[in-house]
Length: 305
Image (cartoon, rainbow, N blue to C red; front, top):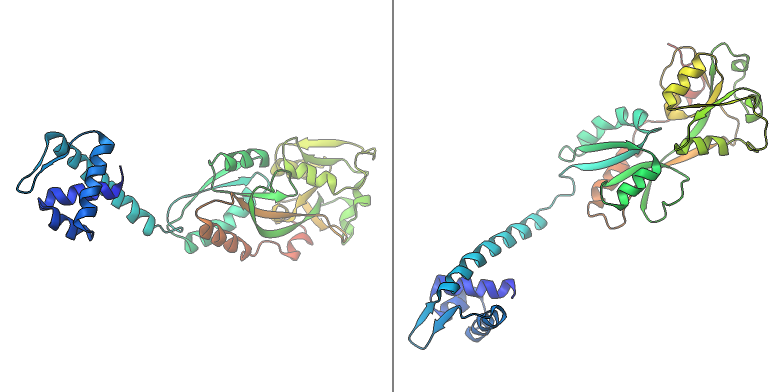
């Protein structure tokens, strides 16, 4: 049974004449007749009683025509939907890791609304491994994460921006007299980092040479970047932050760049390679790339108001 055969049957029901039905379907009469006969054989019933002088639909034939009309209408609706599908229309589900979302979203929401007013974002925060799982399961259209992170090779990625790490210290700390810091400058300070599960924890620790071998005075964990900044402001130690997060004003803190080559992370937008709305995702990546995110001035001056 095919949609074409159903169209032949409905046309015959409308025209009540094989020749006129064939003309309406733009096929020969023999093609239309053979199609209806194949449909009857597939269903195992007689749909039309016909002879040279007589054509009559059977009771089951009338029921099949009724259902065929509904099927064809739904099929036409589906084709119309596909043909008029706009990749920039409809909600996009976007996952963002915890250490990016609070600092990127305030800058992104209005530009994206202007760029794609019919494609609102449905946002989910999470750990990188959780977002990758949701992408694989189809629960998310895309995710914004930071590299390096294992398991991303199976996704299409759009580079968004490169984010250097900066040192954040209490404003009255003696090291704030320097223009920039090296890792050696802070290796004897209590170091505040994110807890297990956050990819930035690994990024920050990997930025410190031989961290596993160094006898740090203390290593203090926080649950979020904002918690860590509050702990630094309270004099509990120093930390490394992504520069976008450090740019937000926080009274009592000083943000200083690290000496070149400064550690960094690459922030990317990732999606399944087969995603059907790649044009919308490319536009999202382009919108983010055009934002003024990383300002050198924001990491060379005190962050108090």
